[in-house]
Every structure is written in C-alpha cells, then in structure tokens.
Image 1 (tube, rainbow, N blue to C red):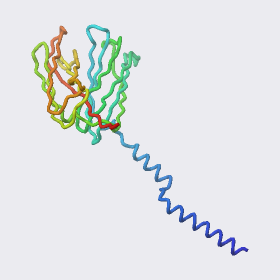
Image 2 (tube, one colour; image 1 turned 135 degrees about the horizontal axis):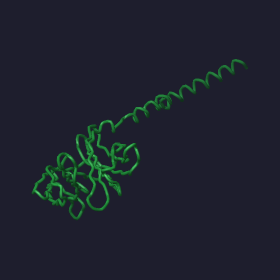
Image 3 (cartoon, rainbow, N blue to C red; image 1 turned 45 degrees about the vertical axis):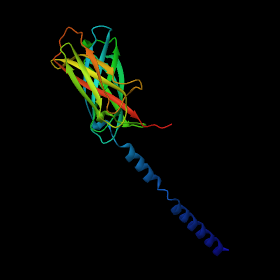
Length: 231
C-alpha cells in the first residue's frame, strides 16, 4: 500500500513537471520584468521644446505655442497640458493642445489658447508633455516643404507635398517676431475639397499683419497626418 502511494505521488509530480514545461509559459517574474521594460521607454525625454506666447490686441485672449522636435526613432503623438502662473506661483489659467503625428527628426507645433489671461501677468508656463507611439496614422511632415515670401505687411506661405501619401488636414502656422519676441501668429489650412494636400500638389495662403508693432522676422511650422486605418 505504501509503495502504491509513493508511486502515485511520483507520477503526479512528474505529470505536473511535464505540464509546466509543456505550456511554454514564462515565470510570473519574467513576464512582469518584460512589462516593466516595455513601459520604461520615456519618449518625453526624447523631445526638445521651445515656447512662445503673445496676447491678442483684441478679443481678450492669449496664445502659447510649444515648438516640439522629435529626437526619438518612433513616430509619436504628443499632448500638452500647461498652467500659466503669475508672481508667487498664482494660477492664472490653463491650456492644452496636441500634435497628432510627428515623425523621427521632425519639428511641429502645439497651439494652446487661454481666455482672459494677460501675458503681462504671466511669470512662467508650467507644461507637462505626454508622448506615445501613434496608432492608425503615419507621418507626413517629412514630405511637406514650405517657403515663405515676406511682403513687408504680410507673408505668403507656399506648401508642397513631396511625399508619397496624401497629407490630411495640413495646417501652416506663421509666427511674427519683433526683436526675438512673438508679437502675432496666425494659421491656415492647405487642403483641397478632400481635406488633403495630395502628393505633388502645392498650395499658397496669405497671412496678413495688422499690428502696430512692426515685425522683423517670421517662422513657420506645419502639422498634418495620413490615416492608415482600414475599415
């Protein structure tokens, strides 16, 4: 009877070992380590940023622009959340924005709108960025080519699509500066009736400047995307 119990116990042990080896499952500690390694990629640390702000002469609003360069090897979507702080850290307002798609090595822009906030009262902007690999869209910035024609009291921005994919919702931002300070900005869409700038196509838009303070330089930035989602 005792031999039978020993044999039965050994048989159960061998069966358990065979089943464990046959499943191919990694130990829980290995699975957890892999999950942590996957989450460990910090894309925000691989972004470089510059920001500018101006207060509109009319309308009672302020705009804050974050210029983002993607130094990672991934195509990302980037979001911002910013608090405008006054002297002593007093909260004056909050804004947020996003870039749908920004490819490796590309630079784009996040606009943030603030209602009833005076730039003169802002001591600093406290911004938190989040970034992750994008789904369902691909980068088109690599193929978008822009050229500015400065006409003194206005500029004309010409944008062409030298890429291979239709660029959706292409938007061009022109920032006007005086002695390094942002004094005005405007944006226009560069799309056809399909909301696209197709490969080989070129469009131009005019940006008028009405402010009393003259501008001495301009910068432009583009946004856009290409949908890869299939229904």
